[in-house]
Image (cartoon, rainbow, N blue to C red; front, top):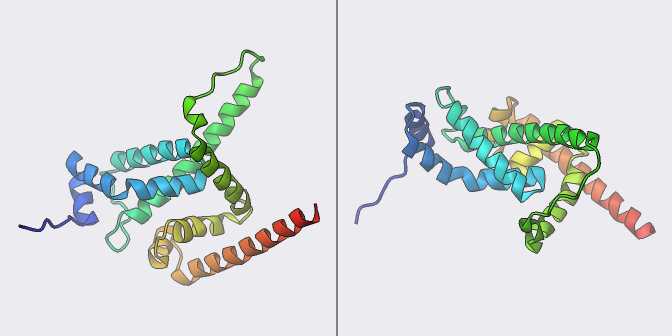
Length: 195
């Protein structure tokens, strides 16, 4: 029985740069779940997370001729930053779409999507919405640090390199974010107890 050696991300990206679809499929298989989970943590919606994941890998394919920022030979940190940027774009598009809907005259209601009836997904989305409501109160730099390091488990050094800062600055952002989040949770609990 021979053991199969997995190609490195660098080898895959080199093949992808030459338009190798099989190599791209391998990269997708390797990181799609991590990008999907990261996107869910950013959006609080499984449906949006699917869209963000697809868009992230579409961007990766379109930019295959460019040198991706591989950190320690890994593509995941770069893919997560692409997913974060894609999420921002999705939110801007959603805001514009909602604004356009509000300008339309009232009409008949839209039929509910059967997928919305899946209780587990709705519970996940509600819980994630509560978490996002708190996390969105953090400064942008701290939100990025939380999303990459705490939620998606990207090592500090790799996340710092992708964000273009030193590791000490990133660790400081994570520490400040943790402290702020703890205060926000305690303050929120006190407010609920007072009701």
